[in-house]
Every structure is written in structure tokens, then in C-alpha cells.
Image (cartoon, rainbow, N blue to C red; front, side, top):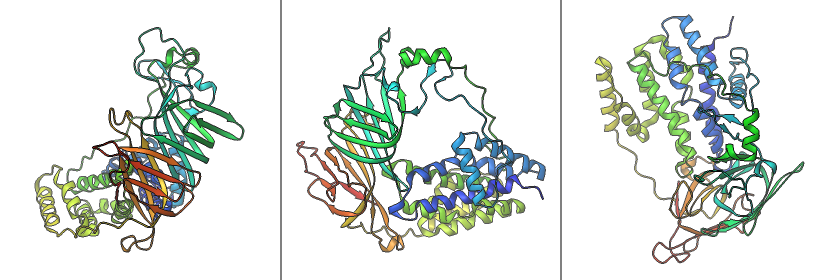
Length: 476
């Protein structure tokens, strides 16, 4: 019997929710990067799945699903590999249903105006030859445990060595992404973030030394350059001579709307909004392990369920939406009411949705959780630092966001939880060699947060500018 593209597409959704739940199962292994990557798949692909499932004939349903799979796989080699691996794990492989990635030009490319642009690629000393690394300014630092591997991202500016031949517009920003970090030491004040960058790239890996600030050693690193004048640099001029014209447009997207205006649209909207809610973990200060797990539980098996609902039409999708609302319980009733009430409906569907919204709003929301006491021990999972004047906070003060894995509480069901600590207007930061090695005693002095001897961050007073005048904010 030939494989069904529609069944494979639905199974891939089911598998995605399982994969996300596994990544959020325990604070000590919370994999924010994986959660964001997988949920992001369904931003562009939830509606195509519903459109295929509600096709008028079996042929149209299969054609719609194949088109959706091809569109989904067209977002790069990594996406294709993920689809092949996860669909096989789900028991409905897509290999053979979608074409393998074709050989593509890698390296510098041309934008829509035809101007050559630098590609994000391996970090080499030659790639930085057009910039003066003796006078860098650090904009931000992110260090995160991705699974069991430590990764770091460093953003900085560096003066151009080349002559633009025109008034320079903006600074050149360099983004360094380091994988499998083995050694890490970093110390900085919020304002003293300038110095020389010394770079060594060899067979053993990459070593970065930041004068006066620290040292990072990793197995490999990639470089991204944001420079409006890069096409005038030595590397840019060389690339301009060999870079082909822009490639043909990728395959046209499948339908991103539903012809169905009834309960199928309501179901599609809810699932899409749930994936966006999960994807909000990309904003570290809003990442919530509990919310991710709750949404995975509510929408568990959504792919298989929506295929069954499609076979029953309007009644099937109404039952599906009501089932999701019931799984959410009182804690999620207001969320469902908000999502359903902001969409337009017609006729009997409008009356049904209005009734469901009214019922959801009438449910008694659970009492707010008591504020959790600061943990005595914790494990550092993530640190994001924005220094004074960072482009994400122009003119704003330095800030830091920290993710801490903390011992189980009754609400976490025996698994370690995840807490977020925000330190606005931080003054001093120190990362030592043992910062990410595991649980350590938590220290909280006036305006400071520390973990063992490997990590300390202190905050300055809004009024006086003195260090240690206010407490960091810690929340679930």
C-alpha cells in the first residue's frame, strides 16, 4: 500500500510535540534551542496541514500534503534532516516523499538589490582581516547549555580597516557563535567592555582572548558580519567577482489559509497559537518550562486527532476543540477564551464559539501560586548579557537574564524546575571555569546573585549608582 503524505505530515506534528515535551521534561536538561527550532516549524505549516486534511477529495488531500511537506523541507538542509529523522521515529518516514536537498551555492550571496553580502560561516582569521580587532566593543554575551553541550554567542563591534570611499553608515558588528565550549572565563563591568580580541583558529579548535575580560575555547565557531559597507571591503570585492546572481525563488508556499470557515478554522487557530506560545521560549525572560509542558499535554496527538476530526467534518472539529479546552482545565480556560474570541465566525459556528468562550470565561481560574522561595542550590543553564548601549536596548542600562535549574517542587512532579532571574542595571559580572558544571549553592546578598564560586552578578542602585542596593528579580 503506498505511503500517505497526509498521514506522514500529521505524524510529524505528533512527533514534534513529543520532542518538545522531552526537551522540557527536566530543568537540568531544558533544551530551549530545540524547543524553539521545532515549534518554529509549525508557524508556517499548521494551516497547510489543516488545508490538506480538509481537502474535498482524497487526491486533493494527498496533493496538498505533499506540497506542504516539500515546502517544509525547503527551509535548508538541517530542516530536511530533521524531517527525515523525526518522521522515521514517528513510524511514517517522509524519505522518498520529498526530494533531497540539491547542491546549493554556499558562501557570500546577493540580496534582492544584487549587492553581495557575507554569509554566516566558519570563523577564520582571514574572515576578520578587514576589521581592527585591537579596539573591539562587546555588545552582548550569551552562554547556554544546549543538551549537554555548552555554546556561546559573542556580539561585538570593530572598526573597519578598509576605506569605504564614502561616509560610513553605522558600525560593523561581528557575531561569533562558538560550539562545544570547553573553557570559559569572563569578567566585565557594565561599561568597561572595550579591548583587544586575540583569535587563534587551528586543528584543535578556536581560542578567543578578550583583553581584560577573559578567554573562551571551543571546538569550532561560526562568524556572522553585519556591515552595510562589506561589499567595499577586500573580502567583499573578492566575493563580488565570483558570487553568482540571486537564485531562483524557492517553491511557492502551500495555502496559508483555510477555505473552511467553521470549527476547522477555530482548531487551526488554536494549534497555531499554541505553537507560537511554545516558541516564545526564544525570549529567555519569558521561557516557562511548565507552560511548554502544559501545552504539549493539551495538544498531545493533535495530528492524529485532526485527521480523525476531518473525516467527521464540522462536528468532528467542534469535538476536537472542546476536547482541547477540557484538557486545559481551569488553568487554561482564559487563554482559550482569548484565542477563540478574537477570530471572526459565521452563522451557527459563531453561536457555538460564543457559547464556548462564555463557558471558558466563567470557569474559576486557579489561585495564583505562592511565590517560590529562593532555592538553596541551583544549576546554571543560561546566561544572556546585554551591556550598556546594546542595540537591543539603545541607550539603556546593562542587563542580564539567567536560567537556573532548581530542585523539584510539588508543582514540578518530581522533576527539576526552571527559574528565571533577571538583573536589570547590573554592574559587575564574573563567570568562572565551574559556572556550568552542575548544582552549586546559591548566594543572594544585597543586589547580588551567585552560584558557588563560578558565577556572580551584582546590581547597581537606580538612585545612587552604588553596587548592591537592590535585589535581583527571580520568578518561575
